[in-house]
Image: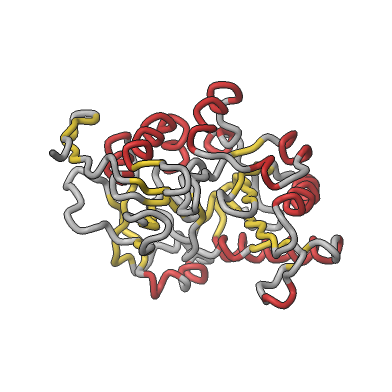
Length: 314
């Protein structure tokens, strides 16, 4: 029998709760749903008022994976959506945003995870949650900057931490406060709260920063994606600031062999990292971390934390 439940007055049909999604640990779909219900208070502010893309993996990370931005078929009428540019035109919203909101040509819709009911409906589809760096209603006008630190073997997250500390200090010199989280895979994500700024300007600044990091740390950092440059180094991927790109949200589970989480970190944890296992967090690790430390990414959502991008027009 398929369980039917109500969340915040909304009727939800939750299916296949005993299905094992992560065979390596035996983690089931029911446990996935329980995880999202448990961390909802921390996760929802990071999804608030942002179009969400889903990486679906209904048969677990070893099954088919597919990325979708459109609302799935049979999306309930009560699920909020927001207009967004078509995928084939969104890359052009950077140039439009130079002179306005960048919202011209809106012709698609994406889900906004606005409440617990929508979160649980989405989680029942078995998804990773990904968001752009701009809020609903202002495509191409970023209020976040993200740097994705991706290690090229034999480099690991340990090397990512060394690069992250340099980048944190460099951003601080520009008056920007940086927050770190695990990617939930191999590397780290760094995030900065910005006053609304066209994505093209944020992308250009992030690229310059990655290039500067490579010059300062030539044995550690590369800023280009070319595979032959990356072994043993950290690729500082600045491209996720483009209007068309998205980043894994804080606290999302990842489609990896184990139920790893993109977990916000303290800078003390980044500084202390000595082995990759130091920064691997599974679903069961997150509730006690939140109870003990709170949400290390919470300042990104707090009023008054955003700062102007250096060199951006007022």
